[in-house]
Structures are given as structure tokens and as C-alpha cells.
Image (cartoon, rainbow, N blue to C red; front, side, top):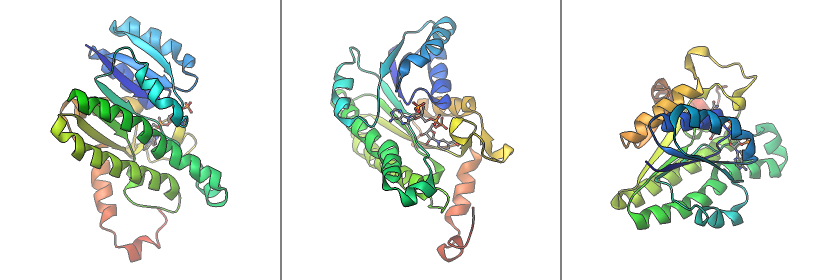
Amino acid sequence: MSYVLIIGAKSEIAQATAREYARHGYDIYLAARNVDELENLVQDIKVRSAVNVILLELDILNIETHQHFYDNLEEKPLGVISVVGYLGEQKRGEVHFEETQKIINTNFIGIVSLFNIIANDFEARRSGFMVGISSVAGDRGRKSNYIYGAAKAAFTTYLSGLRNRLYESQVHVMTVKPGFVNTKMTKGMNLPEKLTAEPEEIAIDIFKAQQKNKDILYTIWIWRWIMLAIHYIPEFQFKKMSI
Ligand SMILES: NC(=O)c1ccc[n+]([C@@H]2O[C@H](COP(=O)([O-])OP(=O)(O)OC[C@H]3O[C@@H](n4cnc5c(N)ncnc54)[C@H](OP(=O)(O)O)[C@@H]3O)[C@@H](O)[C@H]2O)c1
């Protein structure tokens, strides 16, 4: 088999996803900042799955490096999965624009820069899959995280357009919208147990849905219905709510 490129690879969701693809025989490129910290993961995957795993240094905010990063891949991947994300601090972002910018650049601009490059290559080769991890936070703006939510909404819309563009080239694009997941991003938050998934559950969902060429994946499944209900709350009521 050939390589799946996972960007934002230090995330626990990314690591679980890497294990899941490796378990099914895919070779793995793991791209992250200070990627050497993933050496133990590499050894573990190699022992369990006997696939190739290659570490690649990547900062999604260093846009000027993206073309070189992709051109340098000796073997181009058959798929890419972006797990990059930054929740940031909403309150800080309201006062300090550099925090707002970091949230938008990490969750949207940086990923778009790399995805544009990869999309052009996949389109020319007429094959490949592209998976972007967005969020249910992008479905409706809330006061607690609307800067992050807006960046995710932009990413969701970008992925929708990309899916539409690449359909004719047989390149499949999937949008993943997790609800709550138990990771470093949500550490210390008081999350409802029944609605909170482990990274391994998200990884299994992503693999299954990608193999079936699903367009949009809510994970875990119940979030599809929660967000449908939230969608139908009229704005005059929604603006008064604290959710
Ligand atoms: N946890 C949740 O409840 C939840 C819910 C909905 C959606 N999501 C989304 O799921 C994805 C994974 O999140 P997570 O929960 O696993 O949190 P996480 O551990 O914070 O993962 C985010 C990853 O993005 C990487 N990243 C941030 N800025 C980067 C940059 N400039 N260049 C390269 N990588 C960068 C981080 O790298 P470092 O390790 O180097 O900081 C981190 O590994 C994110 O897209 C997140 O928005 C999470």
C-alpha cells in the first residue's frame, strides 16, 4: 500500500488515526511541529503493523514552506488527513487581535495553503482523498468560542467547495465534525460523559467513513442529531441562550 499524510500528527486523534490506517496496511507520513517527539509512536506502529512510518517537520503557520514541504515528498501520498487545530482563548481573542489571528490562521488559512497545493496534485493525478477535521463549533456561533467556530465554519465551507471541484477528478473530500473529544484540547473542561468520545472512537469512525467515501461525518454519531436540533433554534431565542 502507499502513504497517508497526517498533518497535526501530535494530536491524540491524529495518533489514533495513524494507528488505525497502519492497522489496515497503509504507510504513514506523520507531519507536525517538533515531530521528533513522535519517535515512540513510530516504533510502536512499526512493531504492530509492519508498515513504513516517516516523520516530517511541518508548521502549518509557515505558509512559505508548504510548497517545498510537498515537493520534497519522494512518494506522493494517496490521501491526506488534517487534524491541525487551535482552540485558543476566546476572551483573549476579543481583546488581543493576535490571538484571533492565530486561531484563524491555524484552523483555516494555514491548512488551506497546504490543501490547495495537495488538491492541485491530486486533481492532476485524478486520484486521492482529502479529509479535514473541522468541528461542530463551526455549525453555529456561540459566545464561548465563536472565533474558533468561525474559523472552523470557513474550513467547512472550503471543504464543501473543494469536494464539489474535485468530484469530477475522482478525488474524494470528507469533512469531519467531532463533538466533544477527550484530548489535550479539552483537558480540564467539564464535559458530559455520554457525549464525549475517546480519540480511538473518532479514529475508527474516520477510517470507516473515508473508506465509504462519506462526505460529512459527525462523530460520535449523536452529534448529528444534536446539531440538527441546535440548527432549528430560532436566532431570537438562540441569542439569549448560554450553551
Ligand atoms: N477535542 C475536541 O473536543 C474537538 C472537538 C471538535 C473538533 N476538534 C478538532 O480535532 C482536531 C484535533 O484536536 P485535539 O482535540 O486532538 O487537540 P490537540 O491535541 O490540541 O490537537 C491539535 C493539533 O494541532 C497541532 N497544531 C496546532 N498549531 C499547529 C501549527 N502551527 N503547525 C502544526 N500543527 C499545529 C497541535 O500541535 P502541537 O501538539 O505541536 O501543539 C496539535 O497536535 C482539531 O482540528 C480540533 O479543532 C477537537
